[in-house]
Image (cartoon, rainbow, N blue to C red; front, side, top):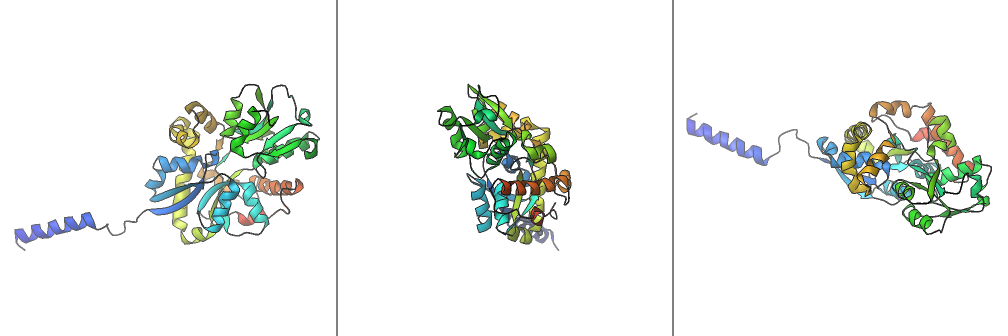
Length: 328
């Protein structure tokens, strides 16, 4: 082969390398994720913003939902593939026998960023008798209120419990429409900053938190089963990047906060405080958390039973049937 022929072939090969993907190079896999400004979505948002998902070959498409129930409806319809959700909405679907999704992880414990705020002259839960409590129905905060009332020897009929959408709680208590408000971050932070109000109880006072470290509506990571079965490796890549982000939140909250303020609109100081207010779980902790039988999984089952007691569910599902740790 003469020199000119060799140069021609080398140039052709170089040109082809610029226009044709290398053999074995995979394109990014798209995942449709259901999120919101709630703390449980921080890991997914952080991994999307800091390149964690991109580095794993994943293209995360973020969709925002105002409630966990709307998010779970999107899982059932196929509109999203993966979501973090308060388990109360998931339990409602489990109780109806839905087998369209599985619990594949637990991102955090948010016991100190959800709670019940009252006027500064209210000294106890019993002092709320006859008063108006604002809370978003069928939420973790709602169950917290019911549990606190029961623990104080009060029934829901001893107070007026009003259904107030979470974003409207700060204005409702500030204007005097309600006397107390049960809220989670970021509304939790906004109410806490208001004069004349105080935090009477947070999730660490919840009865199951004391016995099983389970909050009134712990966050769980759920996946649409049809997606998981067809994209097992993609899901594993997602979980690895997701729990790497949990580690960043735990170990480097200041770094994480810089990415999260665009989601939450919190100040940098409040954002760091909110991150530190949660206990972030690593990938290594997932098997222990979701082990059946195990303390945490048992706590989730007891939570389902409690929801029946408080007439939030008609029946308690066997939660273990929806737990799947095979992708971890």
